[in-house]
Image (cartoon, rainbow, N blue to C red; front, side):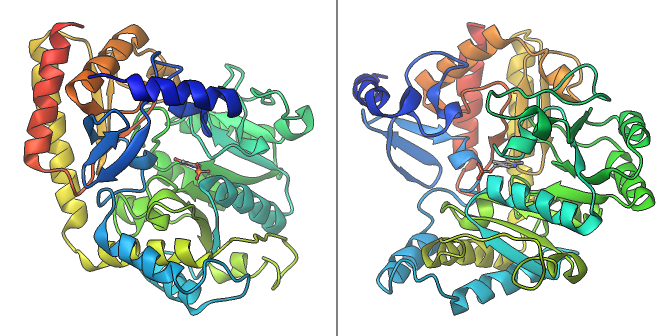
Length: 428
Ligand SMILES: *Cc1c(COP(=O)(O)O)cnc(C)c1O
């Protein structure tokens, strides 16, 4: 593969965009090399500016669950654009997608649309604070909830004590209201709650973690959180920005049969356009402005192009009863294939997967939380990443990312991927 044009475009971008990218993970910092500049995509494939083709396992970091340039979404957006791209007034379309989302997801009466997952999580926390009249929140080390101040808090060994900011610009004042706990460690959560009686508004969690690789919740962990929250007047927030409309029609709540109090969405719900949303039962949602005192707004929230894309996506998922089983079967097939070829190459690894989310960790120990996820061999990952890229397989340029399986992937694509991994594994 040649990456000449991408290199040139990256150099040009670096002159006018910090780091040449509008979101840091795109910059290949963790793996080295030049980011691929994509020109177009269709189905399971990306085509870059140098004319290379890749099987895509990033899928825009989640949204493209039905593959790129999915026809009903493209049609919905182009048709809608002709009618005007933004009005700043209500539209019938917003009610249509809201009603469909509410019918698909358990436990929610109302939903509000925003423009990103970050906004959804940020607003969910404000709502939880308004509802409980408490300030503190608990988040889990290694879980990502977007880049708003409250969530950019470092994992520390003193998880019970106050968090410390891990980005300059986040004030100590904000950091002290974010308490950290370890994923899959219920005892740890109990300790944090006991140390802060009647102060915790919400526990926010990725019900299946996807931002430290894919980490499934262990048996009884989420059930335990639910019980703790109910017993202590704490709201349980499921950040389903990644898992929503992906693990099942109703997301992780449906798959794992756990009720959250507030649910956040992003990625799939926008069909590839900038959309986020948060939802809850009436009692909570009715606190939002203009009904209630908790303020939240957005000039482009519920934008008609974005809503048209989201609606076409949700309709497709809602109408295809076999889609989530099909995705899980493809994921299992890929996991089995990778397992076979990496074993044969005598590589130390662990594969985690749930539904259409899968991650490969270069460590033979179980990966159950941020600490164990951080044990993976990053040098091996770098070689693995670049080796696969050369073979025409594009996985996320970080060992902490989940791969996403899309409906557009054929078994031939999966076999191609497994063969590429077999070849790359020889050189690891
Ligand atoms: C991607 C993601 C976010 C942030 O969404 P953006 O649209 O990037 O702001 C929040 N939470 C989770 C779980 C995510 O995967």
